[in-house]
Image (cartoon, rainbow, N blue to C red; front, side, top):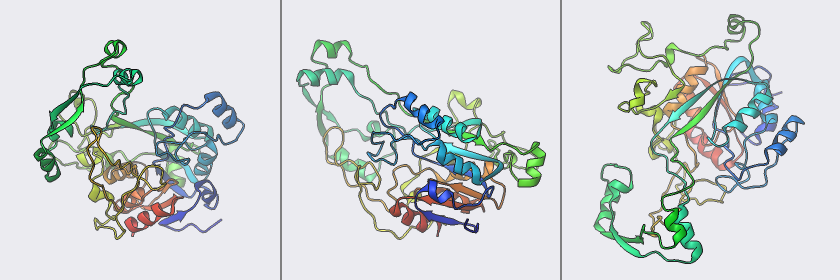
Length: 390
């Protein structure tokens, strides 16, 4: 076993590197693992393998067309995470809405108790929908009439304020696209039908390694077993949250920035930085807010490096290249990760992330005065993470 030290960034296979860490040595685990959003597995085969203590190797490529994200992590990996976590310590694990059940089952089989699910709400999701009417026309070889429509970036990009690149698009005037009018009888019958909802939330599974004795016994011996209620209260309308007087709303299992929506009075409303997707500046900065010194690049799906960066828009217009220093495809907001770390990690504690990615968990841990252990297999992501955590 290696000697435990604070702030480690380890490159390699998580399941193997976790074996080098001591038992009962980390205070929490906050992680964003692969969601396994690939083709539907044979669930009987999955559970048969898992119950026999064996890994399940999925045959399909995943969200990024890579093998590493084709399926959720196995119970065997989570057993190693379980071993290195202190009794009573909490695990917060992001999951996909379609594979949340598999992720939860893997955690249960590893020995974790499922305590809750935190829902992270946002409004910037884009539906990955198949227009069935268009598909019927396409299958029949029927071409829809081409029409010219005004290029309206305010409508197209969800009501954002005008920006220079939008203004340029407006100056180009009109663009040509397929008419919405169906051609074949089947297309007319199924016009307006599709296959997907708009994604607007991601679940964060809240699990716990079982207590040793009572809650007080576990807290006294290991400094774990409880959550930081007062330290994570939601600010009131004045923007303040006095912990000493317990002002602010009790942290809920839903975080959102939609303060004016009807559901706001039922859910605790988080500051915007907890709910919004990370900006390009945030992704490309270190924990102190300084730009990281890594070459910008444009990366394509299937390269093993990252972002979905298509060359053309849906209507055939050439897209301006998007260049990033941090080209990891699923970077989470630092503010959200800070809140999660603060919720389940005592001051000075060690946060484990076996899927370190570009280092956001480490960045958030440093900002919260916690230590971290990040494990990441991809050497290019490790380079980005090292730059971000200094």
